[in-house]
Amino acid sequence: MAKLLDFGLVGHSPAVRAAHVSAEGQILGTPLFMSPEQATGSRELDERSDIYSLGAVAYYLLTGRPPFEGNDGIAVMIAHARDPVVPPSRVRPGIPKDLERVVLLSLAKEAAERYPRRREPRASPGRVRLRGELGPGSGRPLVAGLRPGAGAARHGRLTQ
Image 1 (cartoon, rainbow, N blue to C red):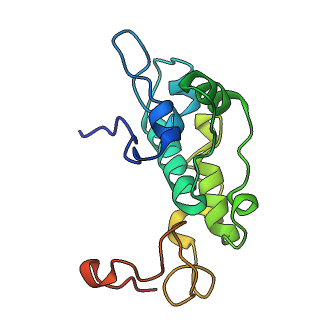
Image 2: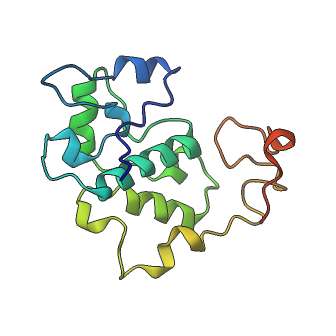
Image 3: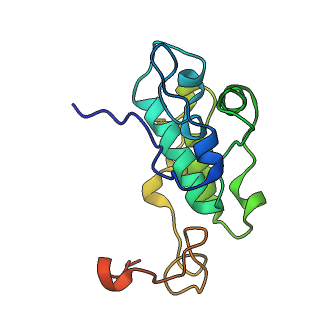
């Protein structure tokens, strides 16, 4: 079984470098992408913690900033555990509502409210529609700061 431990992949930002906590006897990970249960030191971590972290990465990709920022890692961890997430569309208008719903469900404070959720079929990642709103052909990038079609020659065109 493979386990995803850290989303510290966006390490070139000064905010990311300033908010990194990893030392023996401390919480391991990058606070900018850490789930509330991981931030509070819970020993009961499962795949829903990874879903939260993936939601934080999606938030970063859509808005160009992490869901929570602070002067140090501890402040960011407290925000993950306590503060409400600003909806991505308030940071970057034009994000499709169903995509925003998927991201916000992934960033639910309570692990039981994240995927997998059987009660919320309309907000599943497989149902997100981007046609004409963001991404290829729209003139607006899906990922913040990335030109539409950038890298398409290397990676193949995205299809809808």
